[in-house]
Length: 414
Image 1 (tube, rainbow, N blue to C red):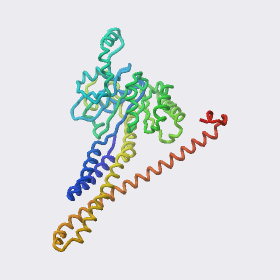
Image 2 (cartoon, rainbow, N blue to C red; image 1 turned 90 degrees about the vertical axis):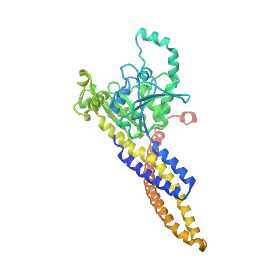
Image 3 (cartoon, rainbow, N blue to C red; image 1 turned 135 degrees about the horizontal axis):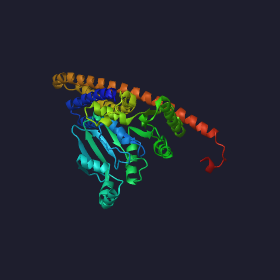
Image 4 (spheres, rainbow, N blue to C red; image 1 turned 180 degrees about the horizontal axis):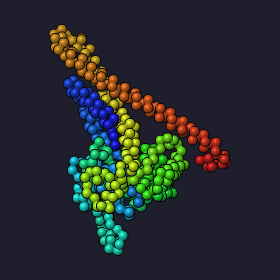
């Protein structure tokens, strides 16, 4: 996934803000220096959060593992994810539990797997589950588990959140999942090629996604390897597209749908990373990664994050920089004016200071000018998007009113 454009713009913006902070320090502008230090810290911490959602048995954990190139999360045919797992970059593997009361606790990989994928099914397991109700109560206190791993996919401040199934019956986990959905930079919804768009999935999209005005969503149809030929693949894609357009016809050309095989992509990448797999697993390796559909999906996701989400993230810091830069310019102008009217006995000192002020003025003007150009370009893009949305909304309202055949009373019209 390529975020080169975003990282380049972020680096340039960081340099501009650092120049403004240097000037603020030289001119002893404590407030400006403090603000810029805070902005630089926040900019460095900016990240993209990808939230993976879907019903049980849609292959979410296998999909996340395929993106990461390693088998980080457990995956079985039965429901596995007991809590939310967030995967972030770390130089060495770490596993940390974050509790709802704000506390945290480190744990081993073995303990992490016990919590995220508890065994279930046979009589002995049920007896153990009954005996360990206290442990289940402890699990309910957990907000999420964070997995730190040296992964290239997450190196550029990308975080991946794997959630329990959208048909999870645990109210606490459901609410935490929806909290992540509402603040995600992009939602990735897993569907199955063999049973795509069930009624419950349609309801979830209508009520929880589109009903909350969330539009930054990628639909991933998994189990491509279980289909037979291009014709069947296209029929599945068309079926899913039609179902989504019935729920949200206003999406137009902004619909992101990708058919892929997470299992084959994961096998390919594990072997590519030098892992030794069992012969029956290694035999599932495809000829190329392209045929799994993963590269096309990751290119589309990377372009979306870099060009759309990334520009919005940087815009607020550009605006901060312009505001602080304007204040510094005013301060420099005031000091120069005062210096020109100083008494004769300090004119020599003023002459020494003037080049310093003029240099600072030039540095600030260049940084502010560059940030203003970026901000104006962004505003133009936003205005264009708003006009398109306005036109779409007007068309939807017109069709709705024209097609209304009910009685003319407040209850029926509402």
